[in-house]
Length: 389
Image (cartoon, rainbow, N blue to C red; front, side, top):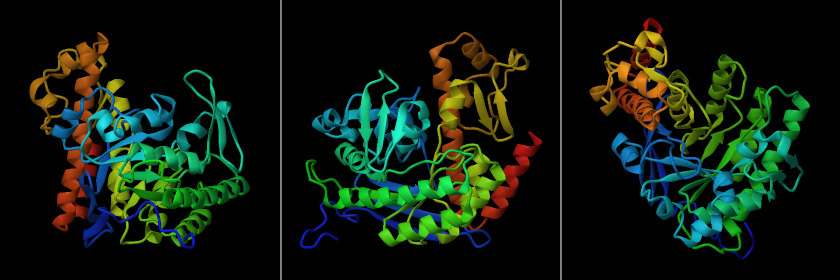
């Protein structure tokens, strides 16, 4: 703490996490995050609205689907339309007309994914915009300042996402930088210049370490010394084997505080969520349900279907006969195939509604199973349906 100076942003002002139950046969957790924009029931899946919109859906549709929180990205909003403009217009919630909680990613993953456009230093990352090639610089201080201006309920520390594969020494150096950047993000979050109107916000730390358990262990332990109100696991599902990803998540979850939210970033398939909830993770985001929807890949209780295939040309069944979404109650596979092959905008909209409903409804069922201490049985039943589909 800076001597004689109180934090500009109270972590726990109108924000808290409550652990409600733990499944008796697994480590699955039922919880609640309370924010000034509403409660978030955990486990939770957060639809990705990178630029302030979840592609091919309206916010009213997201409300109707039961989305309790969405994710936006500081990198994209910084480039367009600009975080100062969004702040001037009342903050991100007002700008996008979304009155429920928002989490913003710091932009670290997006910057590092454009390897040919960026240069890393201890101070931060110099990069060129993927939009117009203009030069920019993003530091932990800048990324935190952007997110404070946006006014998201949960904001993320600036981290370095290590590519896969990478050798131990490279990953260790990257992990050390992530820890230094985490401390700088926290310092800025608590004692920044205060240019923005104070809003109740949380800053989460992000654990890195690649595929090396000892590095992930060390990173999380040192992050906990910084005392963040929530912790995330980053840098997974970037090409490593699925079994290794799940084992690393399980190992990390065992190290994370029981009384704080646990967030697994960028993961994943419905089965990934099922397995990672079983080891104690609470929060998830992934572009898979929306991106796959636009590509005609639809999730069902018996696996996925690719709607463009000729076998669906005369198929009058819904996407999923067990699904209660408005798409499955109104449209046939044959019609959805026609829309997709005709490149109609309605195709992306209907497919997205279905996939998001499938994810959000699966999470609702998972919460019910944890509450009734039958999560193990739910997992077994869900996997059996997927395997026989």
